[in-house]
Image (cartoon, rainbow, N blue to C red; front, side, top):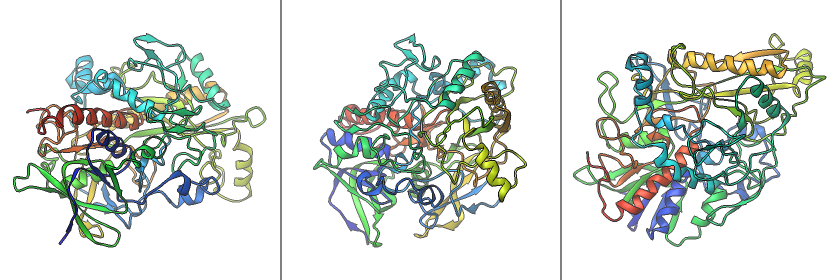
Length: 592
């Protein structure tokens, strides 16, 4: 029998970006909050020491910061006719483990979605007609607009100290910024990062081709900054060890460098790490959460009663926990009925290699950062005419080569032997003069009827619970889009002066072993009523009103940007609704 702990006002499952933001906001409101985190405590001073944190073998290859599949995994298949098998080594995406979550190891590319991304279905239908969209595509509007979310984008950017150049300031287009972005209320809190030679050359070539390049919005800070909570971040040193790594310099925006130092000093906040939440507990009606049951590292089971439950784990595990707790109706791809597991999506990432004359070009790729680069947005979202092209969606294109690490960044021309003296010579000849950007085209993945999540009928975790099953494949729409964007990127590489360009468009089928991004979305999406969503517009469960589900789990589909900026904005949006509406009158904030 579980040991019953003293009652709390709020229990939070997961202490990454969303859990940290919600905990800080609700403790400020006077609530007694406990966060339960599966992984260990992580802190910059003790876990990311400058003497060893830049260890590519330990962190990139051996996955030091990530969940081990022996702890928990998922099963994978491309379609419903296949038998799903367990993922034994993370490949297509990485799952963070510990306090800070994926916010520890992200590259810190901090985007706002386009205004039309939030009204996607209605916008595309109005412009192209309903018949233009694939019949099995299940995209939909979010139920909120960019303008509603803008103050909360602003709050997240100022929490992080995001470095960038505004492109649309109070409706006025700004020179050097992204002219396609939505209206922003004030500039970025810090200036853009300094750009390397390759990034600058890309911007010049893009401009000559008629595009409007702008600097990548970055959570790797261009200068020191003190955020509204009084936490100070340092200036980026351009070491190139961001994605997969913690930051030893306090210069990458993470929960550890922005909000946790304040949160941990509060007497009404408690964190329990290395504890696995087994289920969300419900009362006899099934309409109210009473708290959670979790197991600590010794195997002892506890019950944590609470008035309010916030599900802030990674997207996959949010969905798994909803299913295992019996909250909401399981999605059925045959009928299209049910909400939990529906509209699962990932990202469609592609790029290429540009080989330049080694006697004329030196890009110094090791001088870099996670969110450095120059980008164009002419082919993102619906910024261009899709009518003649036969697909919808798009993404930003950029020279965003983020590192020159010696194990991973070893590009050589085609037909080079895979090992031996000729390979070594080719590597020496090309290391400094190659543009190696596998994620230059960072594009959308829209949702489809046959891409979904459910519980695996065969495979179980170490506690005997069913693993989450992924059924996912790329569709023709995304593959056409990827080929188109990759061609546009190759044209810019050629304009830069590359003597040889190797295009790397995304090809099917979806390969769970080949890394893309960790930007998994959907499965319990937000919307305007229980027939089209699992959550209302405030991320509150339609079925259990004292449960709020955070993160990219709520995205109806994924856009052509990294999702973290929108995840952070939604956390502030949801926290504001809880503080100003729910606490005054607990219950549904939207009535169906």
